[in-house]
Amino acid sequence: MDKRINYKINIDTIFASASSSGLSAIKTIRISGTKTKKIFKILTNRKLPKARFCKLVNLYDIKNSSIIDKAMVVWFSSPNTYTGENILEINIHGGNSVLDHLIENLLLIDGVREAKPGEFTKRAFTNNKMDFLEAEGVMDLINAETKFQKNLALQQVNGNLSTVIKVWNGRLLKLLAHYEGQIDFPEDEVPENIERRVLSQITDLIKEIEFFLSENKSGDVIRNGVEVAIVGNTNVGKSSLINQIVKKDIAIVSKTSGTTRDVIVSKVNLSNIPVIFSDTAGLKMSVRNNIEKQGINKAKKVIKNCHVKLLVIDVTKNLTKHILRLVCNKTLLVLNKIDLINKKKLYSVIKELNEKGLKKISFVSAKKGNGINTLLNDLEIYIKHKYKDVFFGDPVLTRTRHRTALKKCFNFLKKVNNDKDPELNAEDIRLSLNSLGNITGKYDVEKLLDIVFKDFCIGK
Image 1 (cartoon, rainbow, N blue to C red):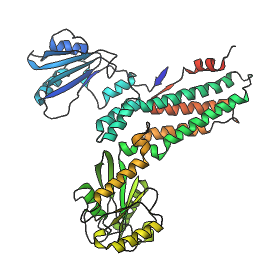
Image 2: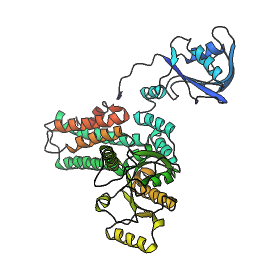
Image 3: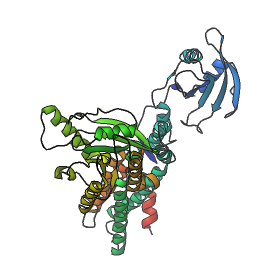
Image 4: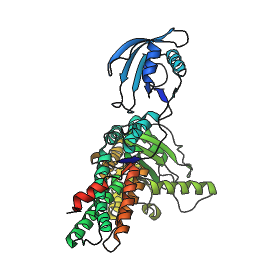
């Protein structure tokens, strides 16, 4: 039996426009709840139509029987609806006056009110039409701006991640049944090979969860965007570079060092990858004032939390050690101002970088725009390779909430071992189950008894 967070029983019938605001050819009003039949009869003076069939009807004003509009209505019968409740969809002409007139009449009916944000999906959850993950997927699908975001959201809406959690849940229930059996029947000695098998199953589960918790399985990079920090010394062309990337002047370009004091952010659709570029203050050993210091501190924070760094280097100047210290496994080197040096000097810089083990290098002239497309192509390849499990693999975690709950499950499972009392092991597994339940919004409790009898043959 599934237990879920207790919400107030849905008493009110709710409605909302399912169409965008402003003028349109058609607007759809969705109504959900026990009073949808009554609403149809009041507004149309007709009998309820057959479920899932369109019906052309006149809508009448409740107070004076004047016609509100000629509308196409569809009736959906519970429980086979989005919310699990009776639903009535009214398709009217898209003028605001028609919509306002209909809403005015709906509000005259007792027990009918406008829906709160997300309330239709919340009712779908409370009526077991979807779990938390699928509900979150619906919102992500609505907000998706790129193909990868849409595909990730569809995975969640279709229950791909929910299925993984469900499988883990079933395996944990069997493990819990094992330890519950030891508690209930302490006189029955458990063979050593069974204990080894149980611990092996726990180890396998820990490895699977650990893989899901790895950075490369973080769906945040698609859902929220890949955070790319443009970093480097002062006056190396970082602001010119971000202006070229986003194709507009969002950052001030000046010969005066330290012009960028704050972090300048812009979002770009990079071949269906949502990328958030951040232009940061120039990093240098000494600062002139407190404002410049604050800018550098903000830059360091962005650098620490970003997914990828574009380290911009001025090829006309000597490489500085404090900048090269920023190079790590999430860094792409960008050699800027290649239009200002000859090939011999450029090859010398490349050789020096290669000797330091730095191979991923792009060459640009941020001022003239040369090499920008190649840089973006290199960045795209790098992101897709680093997060290939997210872009092309199995279901992934898309929210911090998922990761936090799964981390708790992981930590509880790691506590289970043969040297502990069965009651302590059972409690750790129970806590692991509860943590999984926090991801989907439900947890199983009464299946346990059947599993105990089935797996342990008690009463034989």
